[in-house]
Length: 276
Image (cartoon, rainbow, N blue to C red):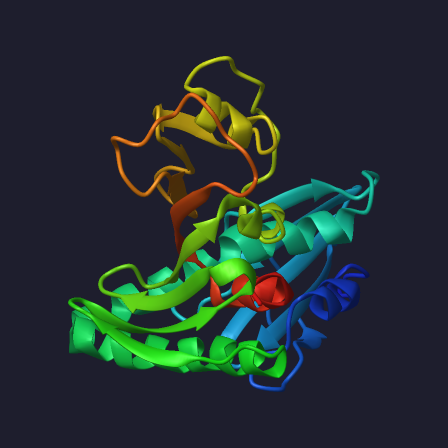
């Protein structure tokens, strides 16, 4: 008895189109190599050695990480096909969570086989890719070194300085900023997690409320600092440059320092227009 043919998942092609091309090559859509759910529509999308399986059945769309050494049984993303713009929701979650996690898994495998120095070498290729995208948008880059990695730095409007770093042992990229707080307003909506589950708060200082009122994902860590994220996905902070600076006032021009870590390369490529 022959098994039923696996039919194409309609969401696969528009999802692939929403993910950024890597090294000039767009994501490719092909047939799933095996069935995850009986009678479901399935497709496999690939970018280099990375692969995702898109499964559609009974009004639900799932995305699975497809690793060569693992049979996928648990979806990384699940959305209702009847929801508002489900493919855009899929792409957002893949960029924020699934692909960065795959980068970290690759880094962990590399460190066990070859050490963290090889991870830094491998991730420098990703750093260069984002760097060339920044140059295409007008940035003038400088190579920089630090104790546990390498990076690039560039200047933006009003004297702000950005940095992008490959640091051991994260497996992802880290973004730093020093400049007026409003220089972050363009990129934070791209890099911060969704607002769901976050509510307004009166905690903190005038400085921290200035940020958390605009971005509810932030929570006050102290009077001079807010943070977001936690274990697993992206996390970071925005703070006044010194802990003894007054926190009883805030405005868009106030100087801050920020660090956003565990960022996936694909997500950063979508954020490049907001970084120059």
